[in-house]
Image (cartoon, rainbow, N blue to C red; front, side, top):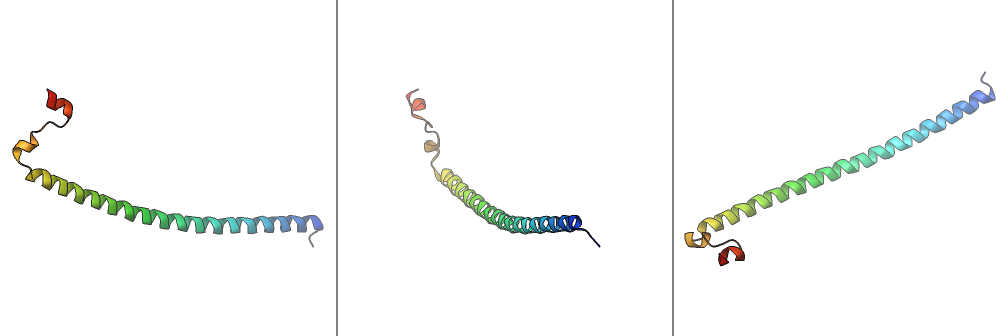
Length: 82
């Protein structure tokens, strides 16, 4: 039969295991939230990349439509003075 010291050690160990289980469950919940957040941010990033690509294509199309003489204009006021 266990003595009081052994019972106290078992109680302490049981309490520590319960604390670790609670911490583990809290970390699992936090991890699930972070995984969800990463997924959401990845979708947002992909959407922004797509929008940027479409905007670049529109700008490139507009540049192609510019008359040749307009494309030769200086890109800065300093170049216009020269």
